Image 1 (tube, one colour):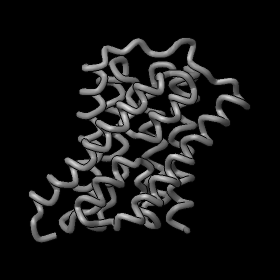
Image 2: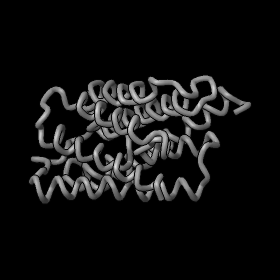
Image 3: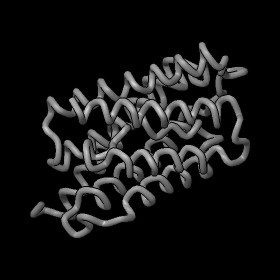
Length: 207
């Protein structure tokens, strides 16, 4: 239960920061830094308890690389999606956060962008936080957080920069994405996470 509570809390603050900094626009041009920053500190806070995934696609990557049992991955997903939904609902109901209008997406571009940077995020996580060669390092939270910063600035205007099914669901609740797009994001994000996990196994066949 400690792991799942940690995943709930970390995902909650990640999605809440997305809502306030990006959707509500409180951080302006620095929204990407705010989002990457909160992910970084939540990873440092909870990484020693749950691994600090806060992202079903990352949990998928860790599962496919052999670091998480299937049932535990499902429990992680429940905690993460619930944390994201509660954060979005709180932002919407208490703080009045809502998208002025849903994003008008070029779907092929948006789905490709989500795949690429979700893969990059999951790839960085499994390599810097789960590989034996980097075990016990002090930089993993920074590396993961700044992958999100890079993705947000690179393709945020193309796809919204979710890179995470919990974030996609949260911004769906806030009206940034239509639910058909949310489901599409979930599919490509989970496929990207699985691909990163498989690549880890290829690069580290003995782990």
